[in-house]
Image (cartoon, rainbow, N blue to C red; front, top):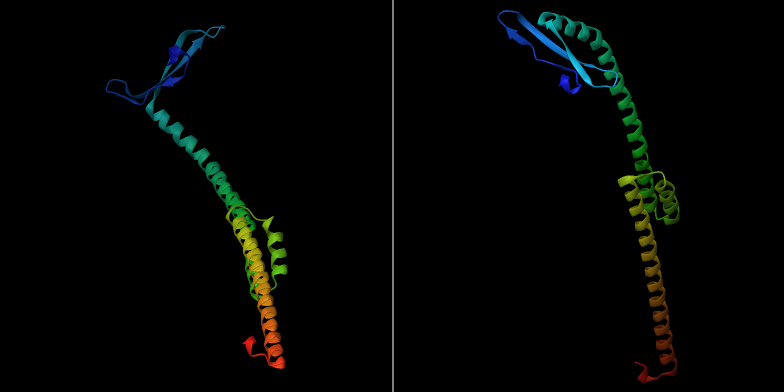
Length: 173
């Protein structure tokens, strides 16, 4: 790798004659960037262990503090996100109570107000509430129209029967 212009090193070598060591290699490059040589250094493995311990001793507290801060910030951010997303649920519960009381106009206004403030599944839920209110209103209007038609038919029939009785027509029945 050093001849290709890359820094490299070996694993710790266990040599009976020289002991445990690690070799590191760096390329020596010309002004044009061509590799013209390689510099190699052997380091006693005990020195590597001492350097590792020093780095860990110095870096570990900083690493732990940064990770703890990141976890806390992520927790705070997640908490705000969840609270913001779930804020619409009590409003939808209140809307369901308003629907149960029969005030569809107020319920529809509440749903429209919260529909723009939600996203994802909660937005889908508010859209479903809106559709439920519209369908309920349409069903009530249909029932009302059918009731009116039935009432008109009944009144016509009562009028027809009374007219027949009044004129004493037997063919009316």
